[in-house]
Image (cartoon, rainbow, N blue to C red):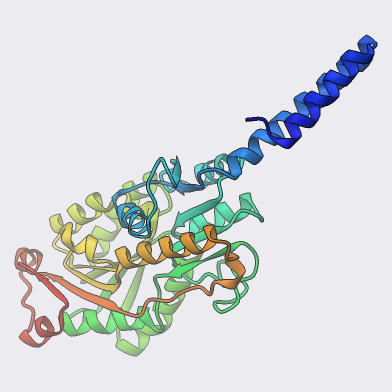
Length: 341
């Protein structure tokens, strides 16, 4: 069925043909029609099935898609997904975000601070739902938690004083710990903030922090041997999306060198890490899907406050503990939300 715009062009063509025309008029009219038809097509596309752009799809996004299904969306009928891969690399993140902007999707959903910043740099108009980010204000994503402003909102994986709490918990579980390595990504603004929090906290706990920056695959080849040489009593790491792509390599290294690892999410502990304390990552993805739904229903990102986690999970992998020769006190096990045997 022709749209009003197409009908107007067709009527004009018929009128000119009926009255007779010069070649120049005909060419000019065709040029106008050719320019108008893509606009009409885009308008039709925009009024059809909403499209959600996702950078670096992974199994954790299943929680996001399932939540949208629970809200009544059917993939391929009432919602569509556009996927772009960057593997967490800064240069590729920018390209992936740009690909989602031209032609535009209706909403961009991102995991972590680097991908969220890439999306924000690519567009100031398309709504962005940033999932499991660090400090969104410090990262320049929003003006404030309560009033994000602009086109970005979402949720953060960080809670008040989370970094010092993780150090304290590590000290409770392993009383002898004194040297702690911190694996972080210098290209992730939230990781920089966590590093500063840890640096401020370690003197109060009589600990020493060993900084292990990794921003690329090549960095692992030098960073891991450096960590082995430093012989830390334990290692902390963040939920940086790039480093999460290499979590199997990190956990294998820790097991080989008998270094207890403390992680932010349950998923890393299930994969073989020793200890996890942080927000529920699946829950953050489900909440991100709820924000996408609200935006597709007409709510502006600027009117959706950045959400903070309300529950934190303590997960202990006793199989890994035994392999490391560690004993975990009954009081700590009683506090755990999940113990993996």
